[in-house]
Length: 116
Image (cartoon, rainbow, N blue to C red; front, side):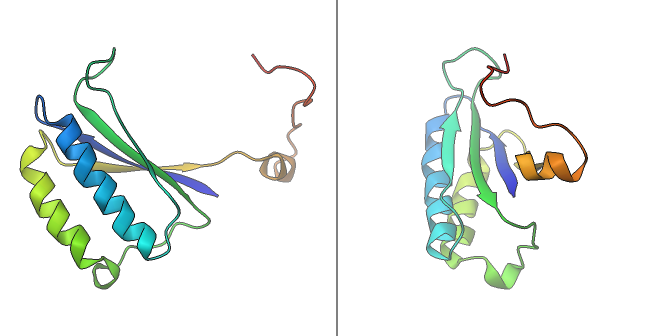
């Protein structure tokens, strides 16, 4: 399983507007079968200001062919792009599971102990 994260740096004061559009973009993909995404912002919090993130999981990494992008996503992206301070990026992570650790001959921690 993989975790994908879309990262967007919004123009100053536009994080919630970008988050609104990103939520709609994610909903369009979810209507086409993608897993539920979670959208979150950093506006008003410690750290890099005006950041917007969307995260979701997928069983496999597959190309997102232009022919499979919902028309609503194209429209919402055009609306969102002027609110971004820089182009958005996409990050990919492989989710660590007990099975994947065992496949690599790594010991899975004892569930009775706190790992912190």
